[in-house]
Image (tube, rainbow, N blue to C red):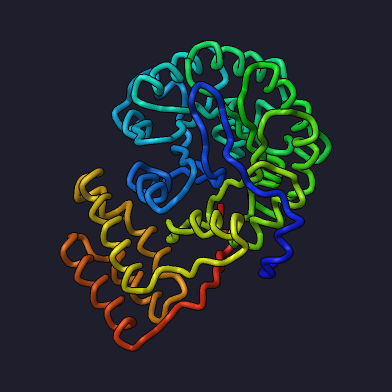
Length: 353
């Protein structure tokens, strides 16, 4: 996958025009991830070169109630999408209007969340793939309610006996949806097994609107393979961005040129982490920011010598200056010794869930 010449037989990524003046210049997209894609992280990933960033999934009823934490989740900057989930067309339409009023340039509808609380308890997320009539009503109501493009994210189907993503994509297109993202798993798979990029080709052949491939894309090589097998118009990156806000830019560069961009030098990674940490403290407040940042600190340091002890110590610290001092000591020691990452990426399957 590292041979630049091999890219000549691969479809080149091109800007995606969603209409209304909304263009995704580089269709390498940050996926919505609960507890991860808050505004500080989205801001950082967008600054490093992602073509589009998507908020955490927001329940439509929570948006309508204007819960303070929900409204914070819906804050946007630049070309950003707000993802909504729900099972009532009127509520989805109202929530979409509220999100657009707060600056959302794109509304993304979630038909893919596999979590029991959402898919079973609320009959939202991936549950809507089992009720195409209800799905159509939600899509139509949301599209009619807002002046911005509406997109859809879904899975292959509820299970392997009901792989109806191609049919639902056609329903979505007829409803006015401008782009569809397909995670190459069923709801029943959750995050187990491997994403089926071949299947996404069935969706691509079924519609004329852009299709985005999602699932298991954690390296540049996996991105080009996903595009080759699916015929998709772009890729959506999730867990591959953990601790690597620069990863979408690396993927975009590789897809466009066939050359790999090296990870930033370790000293630069330290400064990115410190900037991210400071942004989280400013945004969430000191107490919450320190707690929320712990997982990010762990992801940034993953694979570095002494990272387990570093993470353990940072998780026990309750004041920001001590955490900042620990980050400096940890990274400066590695920089002084001349340590360089090998550029590899590994993630336990449990971590992905």
